[in-house]
Amino acid sequence: MSEDELLRCVVDCARLLRWRVYHIRNSKRGIVQGHVGFPDILALRDGQVLIAELKADNGKLTEEQDIWLREWRKAGALVHIWRPRDWLAGTIGEVLR
Image (cartoon, rainbow, N blue to C red; front, side, top):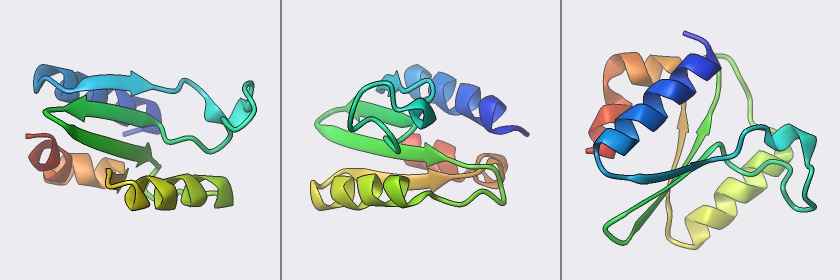
């Protein structure tokens, strides 16, 4: 499963479970200042904020991604780093329920 396939699965599942989902198409380009490293998914439901960074099974966070995720955690968001193996194990679906 590629990172793009994982993205489609996560977004579709989240929307089916009534999360309001926002996805940054490609944060690597940094088109808007401060945009580099922004998490792949921002989702909201019932007063909860969920942040997810999607990575290949062997992918690593960049320094900028790590900073963004730490700041979201401090702000009280549910923060996850998800990989294809998490989808296949059902872990992502459990979190989104």
